[in-house]
Amino acid sequence: MDIMTIPQKETLIYFKKIDKWVSAVEYTEDGVILTFDKNTPNETILLFEKIKDKLDFKVKEYTISSI
Image (cartoon, rainbow, N blue to C red):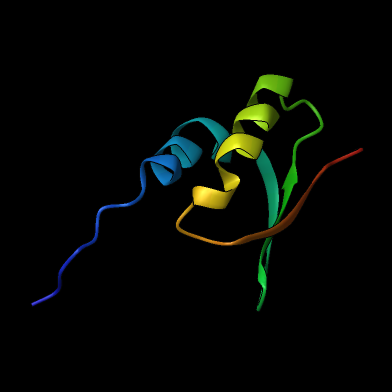
């Protein structure tokens, strides 16, 4: 029997409010590298900064696309 774990509150916030602004994800051994769309609202980046260390996955780094 498989047991599902409930994601952290911050992970749910990430997928509801932030993930749609991510234009690329690179998976590394040290965590993911996220690239945000250049039109990402500043409030979204600030929210991400606030919760990134509490996510159910490790974020190695992130950038904002210049294209």
